[in-house]
Figure 1 (spheres, helix red, strand yellow):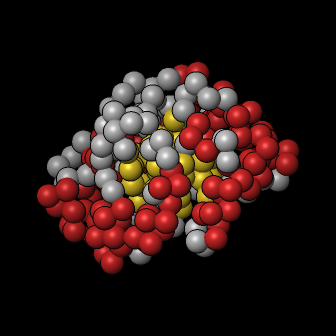
Figure 2 (cartoon, rainbow, N blue to C red):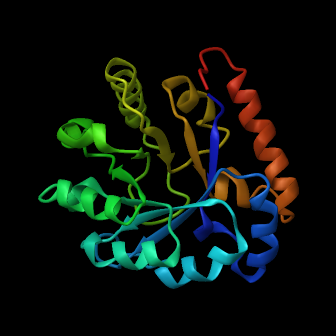
Length: 230
């Protein structure tokens, strides 16, 4: 399976958003949009209004990561704004996970779930078969540029094994410190989607096309490394 790339738009140059979307539209597989409420995490980033503004300018699937305490307060708004995937944190929905999944499905959107570093895969055991995507946070959530937590590799391996054993269809996605230091390890463990931000893409060069080419070369080298499976 070809590694899919999802640039994190909170890391892009928002002063050049139309030009950068033009570059990403022919290269990326998804666009990753973080929505934070200042409570689940202390940061506040993008919003449903941001999704609405970029939707006319991209054909790519918009993947929305809800880092919020009350995801049901946001689901309808991000769906209406143009989201394709809606991905709350498992820590925020497990009291009513099936209701939340059904709410997202009823809006004809794909369902993802995000796991914090300290949250085990077993936390989503009873509804894992209903998910289109599972995102493993390899850093504690809230801010870009944090150090990689190596213990998360075991979680990727576990998700890959469960997918193979039970025929699940979810994508295995990584959020946090996806860069040259971690590509080989993550791909070898079974990662299928890499969310790239400052260290993986946007800080590689002021010219986004050049930065993308550099990132692609780095990922290709990682794919060709011994043990890589992507």
